[in-house]
Image (cartoon, rainbow, N blue to C red; front, side):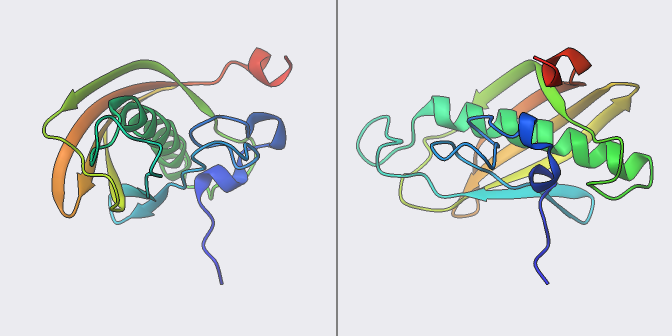
Length: 156
């Protein structure tokens, strides 16, 4: 049985995000899951995700942190309410704030692992810390403040 990521449960009309939208054929389509008390996602950068030869473009890293952060927020909200992803009403988050620290160059050509930790869950806001690792080395970390998506987004 295949375990579904939280992004697999996003309603179709909200599944076009460049970073995590399963319906965006040109996007990253990252998938976020629980692994113990952390969330995890994996991504293999393509050769065109280059900054300089051999290294990943920083904007890609920021977008991965961004979208894993909103997926982490949704997972945290379901867990907080003791509900499974896909149960109604759905949780969908957008980024209110994104802070990224680049700790060392991220090599191209290896799978990246994103790990998320919940720092705060309060009402419609979730704050998480996301790390990006390549070959077991943390190369970037970020802080994402995610807020529940306004209903007007779904009705746009």
